[in-house]
Image (tube, rainbow, N blue to C red):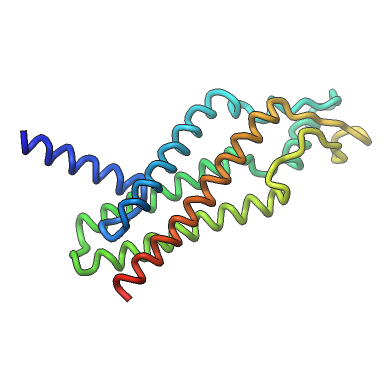
Length: 199
């Protein structure tokens, strides 16, 4: 019974470490919060892959029959889909967490684990911040417009396009944006926590 409980505890700690991207140095509250936020973000992305964001290009309806017009308008309207952006963000974060976990398991000693944890959390903050900045550069108003005019070859002089499921997609974007910002703030809190202990 005790062995089973130890194994369960070990699996739980490994899962929390991978989802949160933290090590033994992190405060339990920050670790649990980051793990919860990442888990929810991951589930939301998986669900939306097969529902709202199944085909973003197909959801763009334009009043033009010219071949290639809708594709060109979509590229102008959304050079990088918010869904793709947030999915890439999660891939980068999880890859960093996995690398940190494997490095600590194989190489880091107890005395040096806080250093790798500090560097890892700093990198995590930079990733969160970079993707938030990139999203802001692509979409200054955070959300994409529901309707827009397209003036681009090979379209007619003025083409009006409407994005279907806009409200649902806006909810997704706002949710992921807030989660990313919350993770960034928690990362900063973790950095300060490490700094008070080891510096």
